[in-house]
Image (cartoon, rainbow, N blue to C red):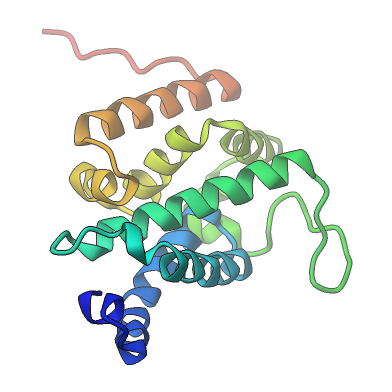
Length: 182
């Protein structure tokens, strides 16, 4: 990054080659759409290029880039909420439940109505809760890893994930699991 700041354009290429696979994977996990993630990854690195003067020399580059990626996704979600109707590349309205989602996420045990309710509720969760839940429970990252990606603390990740669980339980009509007897 320092070489890029000093005017070496090849250094940006090296930075992109090193970080774009991880940034793209993060955006795929958080967005759930590989095409959107690819676009957001490109946008992230455009923002990195434009904001390079805000990076503090000597500071770690990855958390700074991940923060830019996360904000890029948040901006995308806000735009999508303002314009909730989206179409596929061929102009069709996509299915409510994307094809092939069930086995990957373990939703095959749910009835169709519960699965649709779950996905709808996930989509309505606040971004910070949804991101914490997806990173820790779907992607299997530790709370420390999720916190580093999202730019917060492990305690905040635990709280956000817990709130997401509670929202999902309420939406699906599930009772809170009872504590074991002493």
